[in-house]
Image (cartoon, rainbow, N blue to C red; front, side):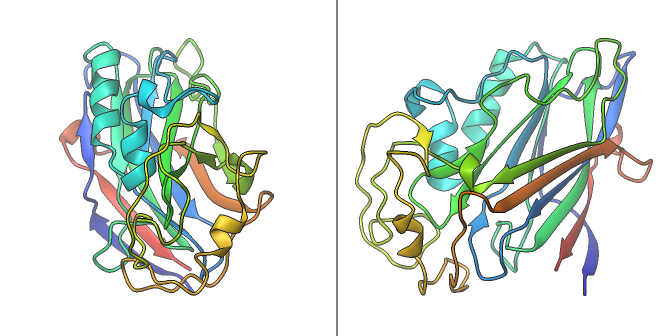
Length: 267
């Protein structure tokens, strides 16, 4: 049974071009689709942009992409947002960080979802969508789209291409290569403790040749920072997150007025 709460989300909003001729709002729903006792993920960074903003490249080093290390190691979206604002022309970008709460912890719990409206500014310019989030608990696992033009929100005339449904699977999780994977080595949002160890390896597919799926299993039975116990893991073929984008109804298209409504749901 679902319980729905309408609330004012704690959201960071920047650079919305409200005066554009083609200004449009979209409604974004983000879901953690993992099993109820599985892993969480951090506030999801999302952006609408002109197709030139590159979150990361697989096979490169994370420190080449400002903000990626901060998301992958601790879920901090501020540095990536700063880089985004510097890279995108002023007034032609829109970025927002969605925060879904489980009690007092700003995390997406398994089964939790949040829906919010986003004014993308000029839809004939900010045609593409990007996202990024950290898997928790972990040392430096994340999911994001590395191809900046993979998800086209609008065509060149500013017409919406949706509905758009982005399904994120376990096989889409990446290892940032910035910390050694160790469930007892300072993994973020874990009560296991320990000291993290830096490493410098390329960004790679977590379930690929260099990944270690047994790393996830080592968290089973451990407690997260908000007191939950990890009871199961996720596999390469498991759906772990879903992002659904549709035109925003009037009740959610509030960014032009300086506000943003969010609807939080839990399974």
